[in-house]
Image (cartoon, rainbow, N blue to C red; front, side, top):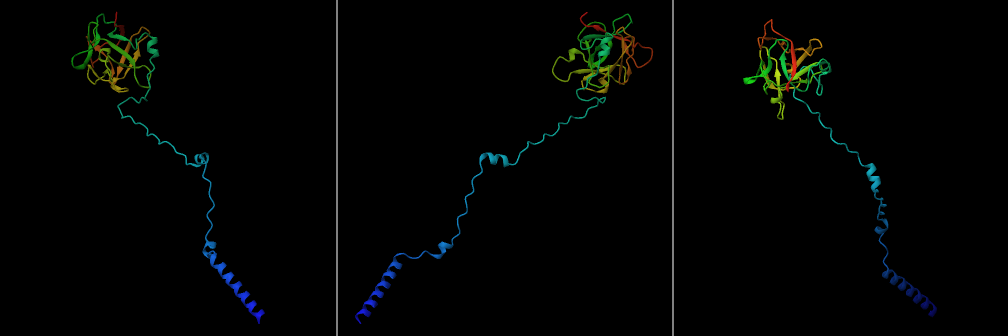
Length: 227
């Protein structure tokens, strides 16, 4: 009996010890064991990698500049008439000259008059009779514009002598390539004489003035203005 009691008492003590141990260390909740693992860390892209994978950028395309249409003889921007053949026969280009009627025995100079009227009424070397032939901005060779230096001293487009459907010419604002301001110089031999052909035909001078009739003189020459 005594042995039985000792066994029972020993078993009871062992149970008490086990229960005490379980109360001091509670079991880990099952939820903790089943929580998802943290995602693996992804290394940040290095500056070099980011630079090579960034989308390329382009600058915006510039729109072409357009020029307002003008009345021209079909010239292209930057085109200048070849006047070398005129210089070779003694016609003065790009210098101050007098435009004189050749072989008439008197002084009949192209002159800018009142109201911008231009005719062969000049008899002396003055600001109004000082002219200059300059290569026209057209493709065809032997074309010039007539630009009186006195009316082209200031900045701006300047003034050019234009042909008209009547007898006298007129001074007007220069417009590159404009047909009425473009003159064909037609050499008359190798003596420096020439004819001027405008939009309305070859200039003809009768008794000191331009005429639309027949019988006038067409031969012209350039004289040095400083003479």
